[in-house]
Amino acid sequence: MDKTLQKDPAKKIGAAIAVCLIAALYIFLILLDNVLPANGFTLMLIPVLKKGAIYSLICVSMNLLNGFTGLFSLGQAGFLLVGAYAYAIFAIPSDQHAAVYQYFDGGAIGFSIPEALAKVLGENAGAFLGAVICIILAGLVAAVFAALIGIPVLRLKSDYLAIATLGFAEIIRAIFQWNGVGPVTNGSNMLRKYTSFSAIKIGEIKLATAFPFFIAMICIGLIVLLINSSYGRAFKAVRDDEVAAEAMGISLFKHKMLSFVISSFFAGVGGALLAMYQTTIQANAFKSAMTYEILLIVVIGGIGSVSGSCIASFLYIACNEWWLRFLDSGGVTLFGKEITVPFFRDGFRKVVFSVIIMVIVLFFSRGIMGDKELSFAGLVRKLRKKKTAEAAEGGAGK
Image (tube, rainbow, N blue to C red; front, side):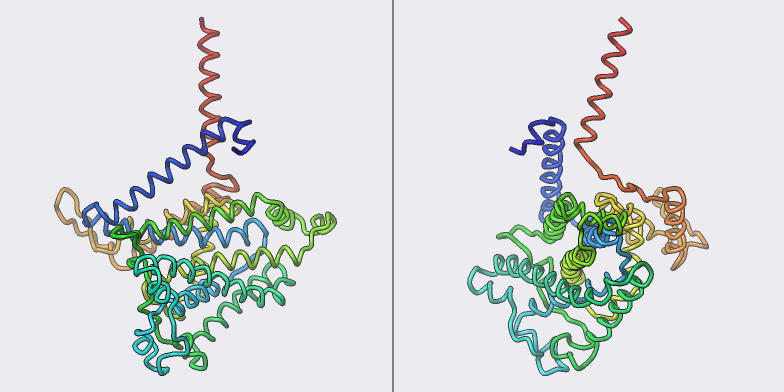
């Protein structure tokens, strides 16, 4: 057992609470896919949960770079694109290449990793393990792109770095739509028919909703371990004061490059999950607006807070795609009656959503969590202190 858990009972209790909550969450997600009846509520809840989990990982990966290392990068959409395409390219079944790459004579890639594994391990195991391998491969390809881009751009600072990374993201998007690389990327056409969440099963048990949570939790856990390691402390030192960090022997370029590559790796993994969620991908969808959306979520959650990014991701997705949908419908239903509201029309949801975001930014200038983290151990300590204080007050009263 970890010595810190032995010394601090609150940490042990907090860890036990976290494990129980995670187990309960996965049981609920499996029941949601396999047992609970499909109705209006579940049909809206499932996509929000899937996309919320994916965006949590993407936002935490951006927070690692912008919040914990202090590098203002706006190239996240480019790395999402690379990860999504790398996943799809290696997950399209060979018998579907002719249909997908119909304008490029079947494409240059003639094999599929999930398909190859399915021949050896069976369809379900092959799809699961093949998807995991393709996701890792997507992260690695994004990391390689980041390493190449990082050599020139990471010597820049502040706004110049943001403009450079944004420019490279747009260049990547343009290249992927170029017909010269069409046999691999399919040019400006969609990639489809690859392994999606619906294909992920264990026996007859569907894992369509649990799978993105599984991958996102592992990746976020690795990021948290990195942040709490000596490398994470070096990242924070670079963020706080580059001159002081360099005086302490920290190589600025090395640690900036390391943070940039690792952030891009997890962005690539997020891009692969996004491709699985959407079932089709096209380079034209990965515009700079996507990066701004991710940055907005990071700011709302709190720059420098992992749990803040996760909370803000689910709130943002739920508000944008579910809770505020009625504002576009032309009216509301109360007590079984449809009430028409004249200004409830297409686009009004975005107006109200923008106002909500402005209120959050104005009254929570550091975001929902600031730079703090959600801690069950801290909650246990507070409850114990409160209980001890109440007992002391009771004893004094007697």
